[in-house]
Image (cartoon, rainbow, N blue to C red; front, side):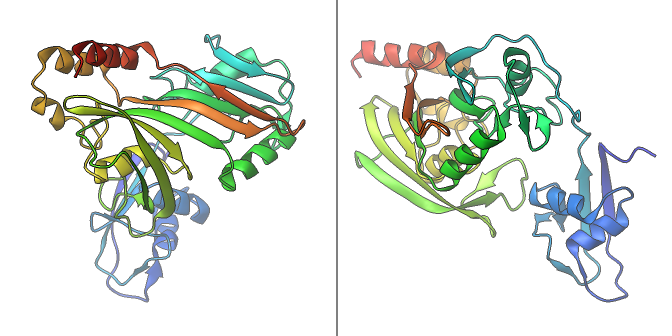
Length: 322
């Protein structure tokens, strides 16, 4: 019987010994292994009394456990002829400029039209990565964030790039428009980021089990109501810039998930409000990427201009002389 793409509302029996959350989920949901249960819990798809917990949580009895199992993604992504902006390509790596609106990897809700689908059609020299012929995704940027990504074409490149990202030696610079005006011209934000305790679609700096995250920021330009920031990632956690800036009191323009929706009403300029609404996404662009080539050892650095939608807002602000 098909058990995926479903929601399970479970009650923990009050009798018996305490049981780990991942064991309870695996035992209670048909077709779910313990490792699969752990993944669901870590992804925030399991709540205990409306809270996201860790797999090792001991259930004492009487708790309400809700498990949401997403529909399966295709086992093998299909090649799709989707235009790509290629900044560099050789036999080991390909560097591309991902437009806003494109998902990096197929997943539930986005089975096609992704960067991986496009790469499978574009690259004719992919070799086995982990035993499969596929592009090696070593880092991601959000669907609605534009900018540069490097992708491995083989195991050797994948291992080297993954190590560089793990060691925080990759240069990653972003540009973002935020609401408000920081008092200082530059700063450093440090703290743990993990799944939001109640909203699994969000990340939070107040998560009980977060990972260390560091963002360096510098003011690039100040305008009335908004500021252009240049940000350098020391780490690369999910939604890192969006969480750090929102929790610092300067949410990204257009970011409806992390507090950027309501702030638009504080802007007095109707033209600026219209431009932001037309943006339709968080104003975040992965501008610069630098890394050591996994085979030649040469340092490579790539830079892109702001996409048209963000540039249009900044051009308007600059014309106002704000």
